[in-house]
Amino acid sequence: MNINTFIAVVTYNSEDFIENCMSSIVNSDFKKWFLAVIDNCSGDSTAERIAELKAAKSVSSAVLDENNFGFIGLKKNIGFASAVNWLVFDFLLKENAGLARGIKYLVLLNPDVILETTALGKLVLSFEPDEHGSLSGACYKNAGVIGALIHDYMQQGSIQNAGGKIRENYLTYHLQKPPGDKAFYPVDYVSGSVFATRLDHFIKLSGFDSGYRPLYYEELDYCLKLKKTGFLSCINADASAMHYEGASVKKFSRNFYRHYHKNRIRCMIINSSIRYFFSKFLPAEAQWLKNTASKDQYSAVLAAYFLNFLFLSYNLLVKLKNLIITANFSRQRL
Image 1 (cartoon, rainbow, N blue to C red):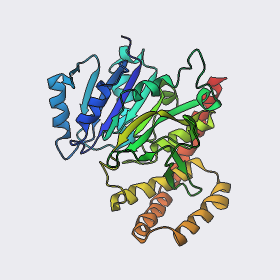
Image 2: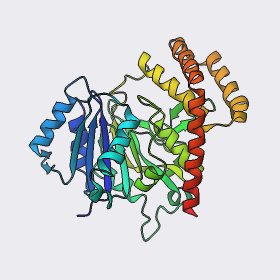
Image 3: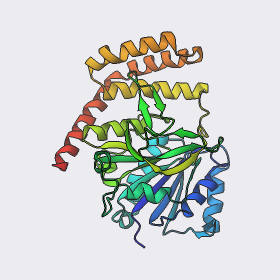
């Protein structure tokens, strides 16, 4: 069986979730995958648990060996974006060049995600129009990133994420249901919890921006870069998964707000124009701070402003680099 899909899972303090995640992958009805797990120097027993699963050479009766599974344990936490880049550019392209030649698709999964049996196949096949063209809408033909319909692990049956949207001040939120009766539709971005893209696109765009450390906004930044080249971010609602959100960093905690707002402002600087900053971002940000923002976010927001002011020159250079990368990508499409 020819492997055409590279699945990347980044773990951090994920000992309670990783086995179920891996089990859902190996129990998938789609088998053309190679699974690579990289641990970001967890403080719990995540690495040991993965090593045990690797040594046992099976998960849920499926065989795991060097032909379909790899594990890397890092000695320091390099952040989510850098860990994904490590798996793609170092582990896959450099260390396993033979495998890489057959890979067409990259699928990112959070370790606290459990895929439904058909989800993986539906994600991958979304990039390949069938002979009947059943998903041949404009979104499908130009899909650069495809995500799944994500259900809440703790509230069975409820939808946690039906696609990512961004406000004018780059605050993000999730759709709570698909629009209308559409099974395939465009969104602003796809969550990194279940995220599929073409490997060659990921390579040509130089992967994720590792400046979004330790996590948050790297997937939105990638989707915005792809959008500039004519590709859309879409959800295939027929592909579904369950997600225990915030397993690594508790959502709405102090650390969450600190990382989230720092990278929110950075993403806005890199992806917006000066005109947008004054006409859209500033009014929306002022209104949000006045009417909506909770007091426990104020210190994180102020720190985000300060840090991004300090690194403004660097982020503007990243902005210029991205313009060059996306321009080259667009020329290659012609």
